[in-house]
Length: 445
Image (cartoon, rainbow, N blue to C red; front, top):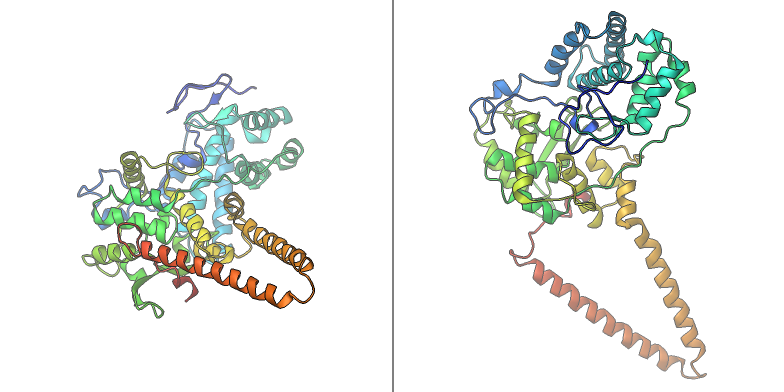
C-alpha cells in the first residue's frame, strides 16, 4: 500500500512537484496553542475567567477523547493509542512526582495527539500491527526526501522527534514494530540548530508600534526575561516582586518562573528585569489586577495574532536571513544581545533556564564568533611581543634605557587615545536620543 497524495491544506505558495500533503499534518511552527477565540482587545478575551478556560490541560482533555473516538481511524490503532496514553500519563506523573497531570505534562501529551494523527495518516490508516518493512521504509524515505510536507507546504523539520518519540518509542513498541523500525531507520541525522534572532534595534522597532499596555508588557517580558510566551501568559501578579537593586539603587522586578508553568526541559528560577522600560510596563499593568489574577487575560492564539500584526506594521526581520519574526526570535535575540555585551555562556544559559551543560547556545556563539575573540586577542599579543623582541635586538648596546623610555611614552600616548575614545562613547551614550541606559551590572548581583 503506497502513500496517497491528498489535497493540500492551507498551503502557502506553489506546490513542489512530487510533494505529498496530508490533511491535518502540522509542522513544528504550526503546533496549536492554548487560547480563547476572539478579537484582541474585546471584552471576551479581557475576562480573566475566560482566559483560564483553554489551558493545556483543557486542550488535552478535549482532544484525547476526540482522537480515541474518531471513526476515521481504524479500531486497532485507536485501541493502541488508548493504551499508549494510559502508559504515558502514568509515566509523566510518576517521573515528575505528581499526583495529577499538570500543565507541563499536558503540553507533552497534546503534542503526542498531533504526532499520532500525522503518523496514522502517513500509513494510510493501516493497523500498525500489520505494517511491513516496505511500509515503514516508504514513509521514512518520504520524510527524508521532503515528499511529506506540512500544511504550509514545507518539509517536516522535526523528523528526529517523530523517529525518537513515535517510531522508535512506546507507540511502535506496543505494535511490536520498534525493532523493525530500528532496522529501517538506521541512518538519520539530527538537523543542525538554525541561527535566527533579532537585534535590540529591531526589537525596539516592534514596541514602537504597540500602544496597549498589556501587549507592550508582553513584548518587553519576552525580550527582557526571555522565556516562552506560553509561560509568560500564565504568570500572575504574585509572581512579580518589586525590589531595589543594591548596586545601582534602581527599581527592578524579580520575576518568578515556577516549574509548573515551564517546559519540562527548563529550570525553575527567578530573573531580575534588566530594562527600565520593562519596570515601567509592569508598574502600569499590575495596578489594576488582584494578586492571584493572571497578568494577561488572553491566550496564545490571541498573542500570536497580536504579534503578526506588530511584525507586519514594523517591517521587522530576523538575522541573518531576513525572515519573518516569531515570538521565539525575541528569546534568541535577547541571548545574542547579552552574549555580545559580555555575559558568559553559563550566565546566558542560566537566564534561559537551560542547564550549564546545554549546547543550545553553541550555534549562536559560533555564528557571532564570540569564542574566537580570546584566541585572536592572544595571537595579537604574541605577535606584539615578538615585534618587541625584534626591536630590542636592533638597539645598540648602552641605549636600552632610552629605548625603554621611548616605548613607555608611546604606550602612554596610546592609553590616552583609548581613554579619549571611551569618554566620547560614554558622552554619546548619555544622550537619550542615541541610547537608552541599561543596567548590565545586575547579572553579577
